[in-house]
Image 1 (cartoon, rainbow, N blue to C red):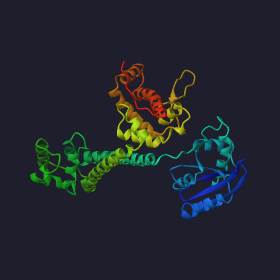
Image 2 (cartoon, rainbow, N blue to C red):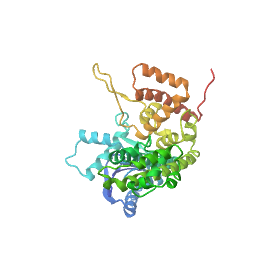
Image 3 (cartoon, helix red, strand yellow):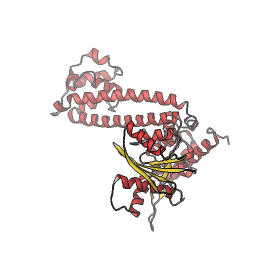
Image 4 (spheres, rainbow, N blue to C red):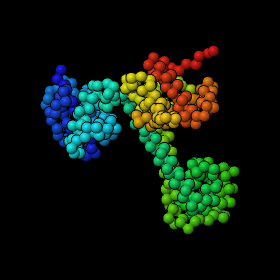
Length: 392
């Protein structure tokens, strides 16, 4: 079989490409721009060798490599994601006389030889499996939702700090700055200093303000004062409140899309049968996991999900460390799902309480329970079975 190995050192504007045969012999190297013409050049140079088995390794799958990585998969070629940490370690052990994109691409080409030597080169190159269209959509939607939630959290924190600095009495009207009626009150005028002059009819027309809240707002209006920096933050506070309201609507719309899309995903539907596992969490797990073919055992899945910290002990010190292969989005989603699962299943809550009694911190106890649930999830997905509660 005519085999070809291709290594791509990915950049933001251009990529360095090295082509070698199955034995590691360098056949060609060149640079392409990150545009349509560059991609056409990439495929044309590879097709010149008329190989039947083409394997491509590149850094940053689903990152700067887009859309070249998707085009490689569309051609039916095998795509590998380079483990940057192991590539760095390899370059430390076998240093090159200089550092350039061309040298880096040649070093990546050499990793194909190590990938054949298990367990020496374990996960040096990680083969990319093609997810379903539904899972790819779930991955995009849940990642976008997480970004918007983070943006909302940042703006809420800044809004609270600014209100404490210029008008703490106004902030005291609410127990939480994210209350919708409070945000609507802030945005009913384009400047914060205009709020003391609002008429009763305007205040009572704001959705969420009732008979109990209205008198408190009227009492604040009579004694309203602002700090010396109000001229700087007068319109910015209103803008932040408006942005938070807009983000709330965008997140709500994303939740609707995520739930509708998850209905067409077998993995998401199956995970949803676990008590406490909600629509957003199962959608995020399904989108990030993709397919179980990526994992050799359930232990590998547990590492990826962040439920299996590695032993990091020395002498009399017994510690653990977080694996570098953890998907932080999966870990956050699963931690939330496991915490809710405890509230639904008495046995899981009892296990959590035992771990806490042994001296484990909250997150450690949740991860310990999560490790058991990963075994359940693995068997559910392998056997195509929903979660079942067995009667004693």
